[in-house]
Length: 379
Image (cartoon, rainbow, N blue to C red):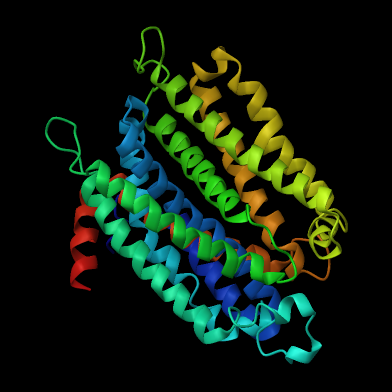
């Protein structure tokens, strides 16, 4: 009997977790469809943010340069190549938008006045159309960015400053639509002009943290030279992640400050909901993992020159980013407070394992990304 051999980057446990998670999610759609879709949407938003954040970093590095970006580029390109899978994760939610968004199928007379004023924008055909346009824009942009960042023989890339600049503008508009449609409109009474920038910053933090974990696990970057004398490559990458984390922290604090100063009931309710029923504990854990612990560690050069320190930093920030997405999305979709139900675990396991399997498959063999790029054009 022949032994089953998995392709490089794939493993039997990953495939088994994905299969079990998807099977449980299929069961959950019959037993508790709202809870299952709520967990699935949360996982899909987290996973989509990783390739979107990777795309942002690649385009920013294309404009600025730096040794840190060349070190992260293989991992970031593999993340961008998972974009089709991440977008497909939203398909199970589209047929039952009414289970996630309160404005879908509701009688306008029963909605608050502030929501009725948004119904010209918040309607299902326009919603689905915007998602398809954004998905197409991201697929085209992802195809271009992966091609632009393919290393030449001298280590350079094919991209131009003009291309990266235009790409960032298009990408920024699409992320704004994603943040408004799939996150803010879950609670349509809440309005935040800074939320799209907050989501973009969070995506960059998550992608950079995962890239640091993958890079440190694969190479001894704490011993490789960085951009300046007596600076290790690991320090450069950690310092970039530190900067991205501070940007996310500033935007998160400014949104809270503006809402607190405005003292409007429909806006304050967004924070009140996330400060009770157990969500407040998740918030404190999120602050510890996404800001306090990394802030202290990033100021210690010995940590940034330690292999375990770099792995730990990346893992802690990535865990904090995941909790950030859960804290921003899940409370309004849960009637039982901050409790992890089996549909949540099934969704996180199924969607997460599918994405991880795709990422590991591409990351283990970078030449597969070129094959993915050709198939994307033909398909």
